[in-house]
Length: 268
Image (cartoon, rainbow, N blue to C red; front, top):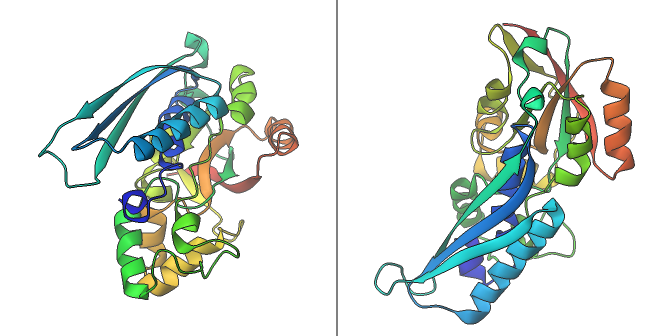
């Protein structure tokens, strides 16, 4: 909706791919091919072209093939200028490397966060309410990021972690992986964690991007609501055996990833 209101259409296609391929990583899988669906009431060729260009860029970042798609023009189904998108990605993983590896997890395993670019693709109903409450226009200067408008900063595309994380998945160094989407750091990690264990976060271990502090302050959002709604600067969470930690962290940082320890597994 923000993209439609602001006319910035070139990042949401990357978001679409990112949401699919990062979910595949949570299964331990390598993305192979992607298909998209784009629906609108009346086709705006320029907007659609920008969206598809973003999808193509996302596929390049994920090293997967864009093998097809569907564009549906349905007059009367959508408000003027509105469009809807969906994506579908196929991946592959060796059976013995499917995640999560619940039988290998234990108290003391390390939680590694990979930095996000901002809210990614979740929490935008709340974001829009907060922006409205702030009284700022979408084209106003972003209070939390120099050189960008509010819309440009909030539409920063979802980080795609395939190229940096995949080598560690293939080497068997990851015991579990959570893609931090809707539900934030409260609801997503348990999906990757064995029964009887919980994620114990050190909330002071990393500094979230300034956008989250701005959203919290202007929106009057509690710490719990912030952590339940947004990724808070952690786009992916990896579960790593302490013995594997140095190699995983060094490899991720060497490949340009912002990787940091955010906590550990503990008994429930």
